[in-house]
Image (tube, rainbow, N blue to C red; front, side):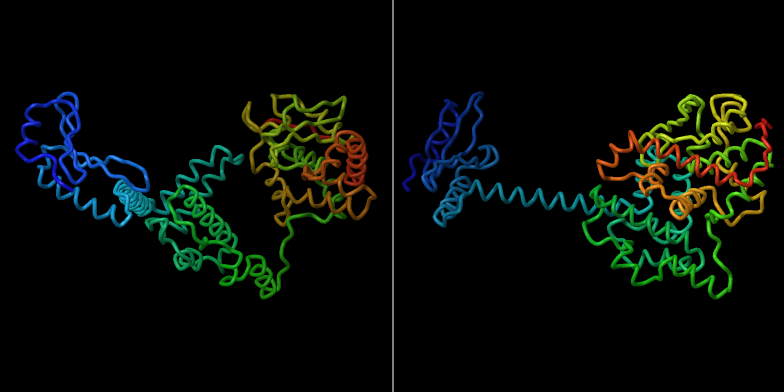
Length: 423
């Protein structure tokens, strides 16, 4: 292509500073804009589409260099390569490389300890048990951080997970079980937060650590078999409930009353401890537990037997809590009912286990349908028709069932009634 302007002519145009685009040759143009801003442009046509590509300012690139660059671009166009698209792709590749570098740097900076603390901080507001967050921190601090605390979260593999689990899997099996679950959760969160690449979780149990370690339950069974000791069951067999309740009725204090109420209602410990008087309708014989105190986060109606009603009628109303603690305005302590079991010499059972005792009795000794007992235990049933049924006829059946359970549980009752005393 013949040059349209000489170097001397271009220089004159630059000095003149008249606005416009002036063809120089080889598709190269001198562009003079407002304010005497001058730059080089390259015009080309490819696939019937005309485009302009900037080549930089005249102060940074003289005519000779601009022409040389224009000729190189002509060669690319001859090879059917669009210079602008090529530049965009090159810039995108640089951006992708920088993003990958930044991600790698972020992953190297995000250690397992930092990531786990972030997870706890994000989740603890939603944990109903205030001790849960502390248990998380203590478990990881004691058994995980010494091995992987400072390790980049993206570098943790199965060998490092096993370093945490090996010292305690056979000696502190329950703790090791929880540790594995917590490490797995933190690693999953790290993937979501883009701090760890998407890859199989090395702390997962199925198709992974299950092939390395025996299950916690099998370990416990094997240990009891070797030692010749029967494993303690957390639930009291329902046939022993009447005798147990008879002994329990002889005990004074708020905690024994709370435990009796827990057995009669088959409710969870936390639901009992934080029960308030305004939740209980003595006339309708209903206790409505609000959703924020329920495990399933749904409001639950507890049908109260005549025995349960009589029990709480005899409790003085010191404050808002049905079962108050030692200090005014405080609920019964977390270990209150457990301490009652310990005083009775029953370290082999748990408060929660009485729910199983109730369920076993209803299933084996009565004709009440399965769904009636499940609703009494606040076990959610997914069938929509059963949910609708629960609002009507099922409630009546639950009253009958809870009265039957109370009659059985107190069939060896001592006829002694104690008033709760504030220490």
